[in-house]
Length: 116
Image: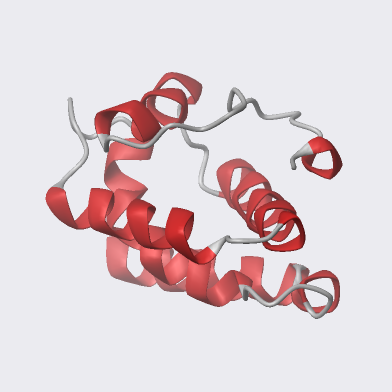
């Protein structure tokens, strides 16, 4: 059932951001595919993210090399966060747990247009 939910989540988010992401070089379906192993952690089903989750998060982080790509990634993840009912504490812990340093705090109402 989780596989079907994850697939539906990826499909919905991809459709929602198809037009906006056309302006950036990073694609929302790629972001969501990389982040799919994090779904259970983000929903509270684990104390720490899996190795696959962290590898996906590092891949997303590395792929977002320009301001436009970072903003597009932010918008994609912001929408996905709402759709999967992620726990804020897990979303905020994920970067540190995976050894990533973000220059902003993850919040449900983050203004992605201010990300540099």
